[in-house]
Length: 372
Image (spheres, one colour):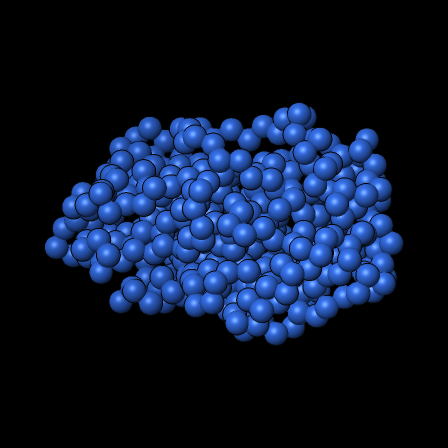
């Protein structure tokens, strides 16, 4: 039976960042994932945006780890040659009520230590794009975009360079706490195998609560309720009229940041995501129905009234694992250690949604602080 210091369950961007951090600390590390490769779920189905840390409540993990993670991620990309672009974003107000919302955004950003936002007048907005319609806007220059696949590939290369490894088509069946760690039963491509580890880190994203329920000695009544929230994207063919990411003014307690205009590293424009709570399914379904197009057009026209509807086409979809239910207010990242569940060596990460990509390196450092 192979013995390791750490097994990380889940090879999304956060699981890989944790594994890279711990392997650099000279721990022997394995990363497992039920999919065939890394990053096949939430981490490859998002806007690929590096957030500034603007929206979340002061002193929340989301706020603190996003702000520090923003700086760390830009530095990492520069050091490792990862494609990244600090393109900036405009948060736009189309009504007087939304102007008040932007005042609140600015105040929250300042509370979180983000001090680079600036106001733009209606005239100044047109300098960025004559197609953009808004009364006023906030410019966030430290918001950017990243090639998330290259980033994940770099993290895995670090793990492997430090002697760790990744195994796909691998699902945790159960884990039994022992005196100095865990015995873990894995289904690896249909074959059951055992491994031993000192630390077990559950970063399984959409299936994080399912994985936690398979760990013996854990009081399952303490586990949170997890909600799946599906977000759809529509792609836009032809010339891109925007030079910045465009976000609508946020709505309080909404499931997301609204249907925004985002640009990938190749310059392709897409709109989304919307937010639809869906039931848990053993196999996530990522279809984007054409019937969603009218709702997308209605939302987009508030800031891009001259959009050519014929150029808007169904694109991709992603699913977020949220602790915030449809009727709930803000819910923070939840990271449970021995103090929360009384199982030595176990770390559970729940509700790691946006800004998980931006916060990934800071999340990794935070988790590593609980590993001796």
